[in-house]
Structure formats: structure tokens, C-alpha cells
Image (cartoon, rainbow, N blue to C red):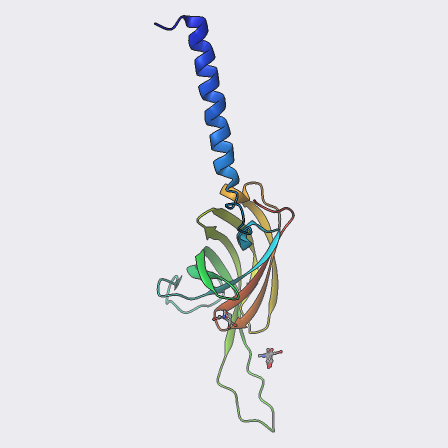
Length: 184
Ligand SMILES: *[C@@H]1O[C@H](CO)[C@@H](O)[C@H](O)[C@H]1NC(C)=O
Ligand SMILES: *[C@@H]1O[C@H](CO)[C@@H](O)[C@H](O)[C@H]1NC(C)=O
């Protein structure tokens, strides 16, 4: 039979050991000899592109027009090998639909192209945590967008910084994640 005083000490030791275990697990340090994964760094690039599971649903007729609401999901890949690392999920409202046709006398008419400008909220969803963001998303080819990081969970708890995005192909985006501090 453990006497109460001794029992308190045992409980104290167990609690300290457990909280150390939890905080070391939360740090998710890489095994010795291996470099930290890209998602730990202060700045890293991700390619955001459609996968078999991607979607975009517009309300109403399904055709984007001013005021249309939509939800979307895309895959996230880490270059240069483009290893799949997560998904980007969001919702938004169309602000404007613009034609990017630029007929020139010397060239044949390019195929009709439209770009959509929206206000979106989205989360970068990694297994190790989420990065929350929002802002104006211009999907025109070669457009540059910069989104504020509004918060995070998991490794990205309390994250601040920016997500700089370049439209590199239709529905394909190169993001530079620029956090104010490394996550792990
Ligand atoms: C990774 O994705 C980017 C953007 O789509 C592409 O330019 C690059 O060639 C891809 N790399 C590989 C190894 O597939
Ligand atoms: C996008 O940028 C590339 C490379 O700079 C260029 O070749 C292409 O014409 C641009 N496309 C548009 C639609 O601006």
C-alpha cells in the first residue's frame, strides 16, 4: 500500500514524464542524420494542382458569374519531385469574370479564355497541421497573388506570414509559403 505522500510524488513524476513525452512528440524532430522536411522550413514551395479527388462546385447554374458561391479542393505537391503532401480546401465568392482574349491583327484569334477573380477562404491541409488563409484569388495565367496567413493548427499553431501564389497553368498554382518562423 502506497502512503498518500508517496502517492502524490508518484503522480507528479508520471505527469512530468508524460508532459515531456507529449512536448517531444509535438516537436516532431526528424530522426538523427535526416534533414528536416520542407514543411518544417520558414519558406518552402508547394505546387497546387487538380488530382482525381479535386472539385469545384458553383452554386446556381454551375457557371461562374459575379456573386456565385463555390467550394473547391486541390492536391498539394512538394517540388521538385512533386510528392503528394496534402490538400487545399476552400470556399469563395466570384467578384468578377474577365475575358482574357487579346485579338491581334497578325495572329489568329486565341481560344476564348476567361479568368475568374474571387474572394476566398482556404486552408492548406497537411497531416502535420493546417495553414489558414484568405484573400483575392485571380486565376488568370501568370497572375501573382499574395494571401495573408491568418492562423494555423498542429505544427503551424499561431502561424503568421504570407502565401505568395503564381498561376503557372490552368488550375495549377505555385505557392511560396513564407512564414515568420520555422514550424519544426
Ligand atoms: C512538378 O510540378 C511542376 C508544376 O506543375 C512542374 O513544372 C514540374 O515539372 C513537376 N516536376 C516533376 C518532377 O514532375
Ligand atoms: C505567361 O508567361 C510565360 C513566360 O513568361 C509567357 O511565355 C506567356 O506568354 C505568358 N502567358 C500569358 C497569358 O500572359
